[in-house]
Image (cartoon, rainbow, N blue to C red; front, side, top):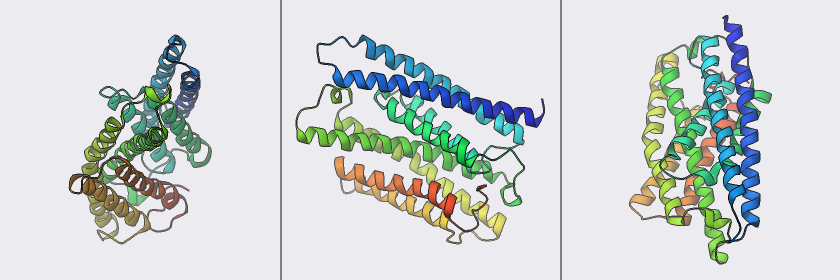
Length: 293
């Protein structure tokens, strides 16, 4: 097959993943709606089945997305990390795989609905606003550091986003409990202590990788542009994100921050990553303007 054939296959697979995630979202929404209405004595057979069907569609969507990313790389003859479209579909894949893999140890079925929604937003934006045809890389990106640096950043972003979802759930449940007893729907979620620890462990696990991504980017910048650091907007916001997550870990380990304060700090740090990804890539200036927009 030609490179164009692989590009078409990739596009088709990305759309398959979109439809599969849409069906997963609908079944998760059905489960959530009936869980809210259900009483403690009500038969939950329908909600359990709906969750299982939603999970099947989620797995189908993730498999299609994985194959779509691989096909995109084959069509371009390189790692699919050269522009915002490719960064988005690869980031969505990392996010979905993080949810599935971490869900093998921790029961994260309760996060199915928001995770499916976020994936639909990321992929929907990618195929409608960010899409660029498969093409060779600009000279600055023709380096092995593309795979090393950008892959590390994409992986970190996927796990940061999942940690943010858990931290947001913590803040919502904390508000519910402060108002009184949990509703039947809220009882489906883990304890506040479990959510707090899960969010922290994900950040602690991926923070060294984010540190490595920044160092790798500096090494790549020296090779490509003759300087390690130039306070480019993307470099600056990457460093701000690093500082905020370092402050989060420091506050937990040394100051004993837990619960609500730690969750808010985690969300602020995660928001800086999203700002860097969305605003700086789309409207920012500097040497990181090869995003394809």
